[in-house]
Length: 193
Image (cartoon, rainbow, N blue to C red):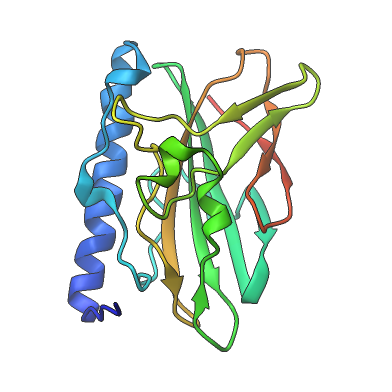
């Protein structure tokens, strides 16, 4: 099923996604257990992509990392912030530099049954701390929904979609990890905060 949104509707969806992402980040500042943070179902990005989003406050214009994927897709990570609640929030921009619409691979969701039953997401992403030999998976709420952008199935040629992901925070002494996303090249990433 193909859904088309007007530019105004896309801007509204992008603004709603960013607002919910920020709300989830602020909710985590209380220092409680991460299991009680539930993303709002409205946090899903539009199924066809979004409009250009400007960098958020605290994010640099220069990306921290840039990962190349299939079909002209590029994921530019704009921030990787350690939060007092015990998690790391990653904000990124997924851009289609190709000449055709790009359909996102189901591999991005990962292969865990609990995440897969919640639809298309970026739940297959991981942070790898090679020094401590640990891998960190995307956080989930108590219903098994991944704390990441969901519902993005394709990105139109030239469009950019904002993406957020939340992970358990590595120990405070760990500032460099490797970010991995299925079908994309991995990249080193510096965690701030």
